[in-house]
Image (cartoon, rainbow, N blue to C red; front, side, top):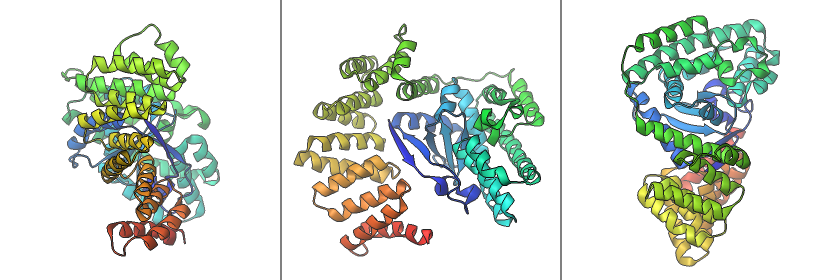
Length: 443
């Protein structure tokens, strides 16, 4: 599991405040193959129920203890780790997903962008910027930016927003029904935020701020949940299992290692062992972490993500040569996961041997072709190209990493260097030209 920090303001909330790319603070994203795959599996039946193409919604994990979820920049859904930690049942998170898919399918972001372009007056722009910042960074950030907005304009926008929320609710309920998922989970989530309007802004969970509730909304969802109580919903044990694993893994990586170990001291089931293995690695206690990882692998031989975890523990403990076979086995078990290939490439580079470098270049290129949103893989790819003597492509990989991380000036600088080094009209040269657009945008 890796953290990706990026200034995503223009890309992530362009649908809401395209004219104000500096309004939102930085977001910290987590990249993890297992967790992302689990979230995709949970979203898949809802995307299908919405009549959308499979895989058309991209999911991102925001590292934040706040309880929030939002969509931005097209079909991009962002789920805060705080929300995943809070919602113990997969049906609860799937209710949130269904609601957010309702926003995407309803074209709400497009209408908001049109509304902003047609708006007049700096007060409305400031208020909209504040709402966008709250969606991305929490209510305190939003409150600070939008302090100058007039109450009348804010009431007008939130009224429009409440209409969108009600529409997304109805869509969510329809998607959940078509997918055979009990809407009670969605009701339980909204019950969690009921009545928060009476709190001060600093104490309101971001989900309540950016998804304003109303009595009418709650009545509709309560009615649908009551009607569904007479029906039989089939729970998917596979989804429940993998969601439990995702939550255990996030807990191990994000909570205090000592707290995790104390919390599960008396438990020895698979999920508790998973969280404890990660916590032991983070202490660090490498010998105990490896032994714990071996127990997980014994429980589920060939599991790609348990193999990956042991490989990560060994690699980050200075034992890259032992890590490489584990990463190879993980990739063989889940060849469709580019983040696993990136991990293999990273371990191979640590060997600092010509044959390993050549293999690393190959697998890192494959990882980059499948997933262009992994700056760590781009950093390693630049190293692999450099060791192979391909300075032009190494420079391009660095430019792409800077562009992905929001460092547009550094990205443009390296893209210019790459353009001068790569053959005119080659695929790499064309990719460098794409980055140079950032220079014109900043002007």
